[in-house]
Image (cartoon, rainbow, N blue to C red):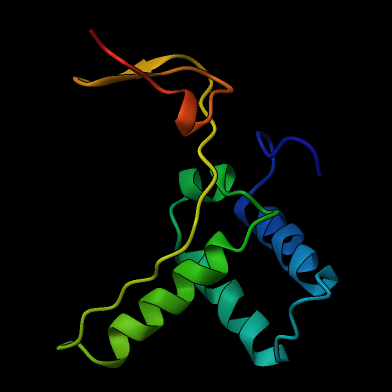
Length: 110
């Protein structure tokens, strides 16, 4: 779809759902797509325009919220690996991260 800068939330949602349908590793029931569409409607527009439609972030977010709502006394969390993409050098108190560096290349501040 290219840029979502001028797309509305419904268009982005449609594109995201189409990407899910094309994934050979997913076999979601039709009701799940309807629930995802409803979940997407509830998201802030800014989030919707920034969402990575190639990832499973929205699906995971919905499932995590569903788990949290199912038992208010339970703690719901998900652990997964993420890719960190930095567009510019970022520094905190102890390390300097540079674009394109792996964590093994992170330089300690001296």
